[in-house]
Image 1 (cartoon, helix red, strand yellow):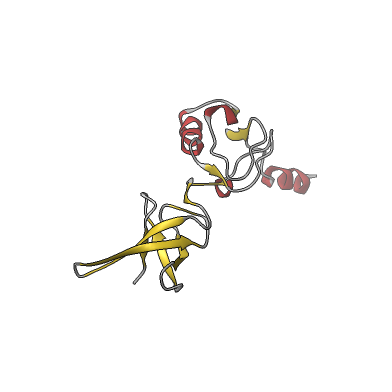
Image 2 (image 1 turned 90 degrees about the horizontal axis):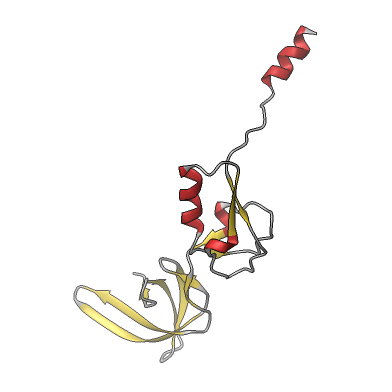
Length: 138
């Protein structure tokens, strides 16, 4: 009996933390707004701050109503769409080369994607800037 009580005391009790839940079904690649999220539990400062961090982000996958939103479910909104024509820039030691390129993937600021130089048809890896310019990696 003592062993049973000891074993039960070692089991973790359920914790009731604040969770951010989707208020409605949100499609992938949709920007999350204030009306899209609900905070379950008591709305403390930490939960409100977490909700503020999610608002304005883009859903990476479909988020279903009533289910929690995890950190891997959202990302920064995409700046460049696949097949979009983007400025392609190379900068080194004061030399700046600029041309047009075609994005071969969808990306947000800071992501590295493959971009095809329209003039030469060569593909390069480029980091997408916040302004949508593809900066060639060295």
